[in-house]
Amino acid sequence: MPTPSLPAVFAHPDDESLSAGGVLARHAAAGAPTAVVTATWAPDSPRAGELAEALRVLGAGKPRLLGYADSRVPRSAPGRPRLCDAPLGEAVGALVAQIRDVSPEIVVTHDAYGGLTGHEDHVRTHRMTLLAVHAAGLERLCPEAGEPWQPSVLDLATHPHSAVRAWGGHWAPTGKALRTVPDELVTATVDVTPWLERKVAAVLAHRTEVARGAAPGLIAALPGPERERLLGTENYIRHDPVATAPPQTELLA
Image (cartoon, one colour):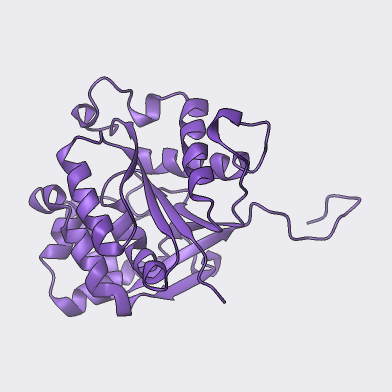
């Protein structure tokens, strides 16, 4: 059975490598088309260049940047609105165009919390992607964005409560809460250790974030076994945009 095509939609450069780098590398190695859409940062920014290197490592093509400003770094896209201030319909339309261009079976993005950090751009990107995956299949929505295409599956990159055992000690110095979900909500737990070397290399390609001590900097400082413990498994919650239940005459639980 062919490995399905898979684009990932994330808020910032580095989110793709940290959250879904293993799955992207796995699908690319199997010959499946992969891509990454990044909601923030201008195409001519240094972080866009780092993103291009990370995607080369993962086999995920060239960056596809929507070009909004990082909500906490206005200089990331001079003259453009912050992602959280951008009109939602406009942002969804831009993302629909990317989905229709790639024509994927699976789309991956942040979970409803926006991942461990709960960053407001992550949450906004989750909501945009949820709407865009549905809109992409409807011919009367965003007609300027190309022919309709309905992805079969939306997978949300997440962390279960049990992950706190792995991440908690490293996260504690930040003083920030970890946003995790009950383990039973996780529908796919993917062992990505065969692609861990590529995933780590992609994370470390984000040199700006390594230098400032963000999550890639944390990964850079860890020994190999600890990197594997933190990054060797990726967890996802499946959201099916296409109805699979038989027709009903009532709304049933």
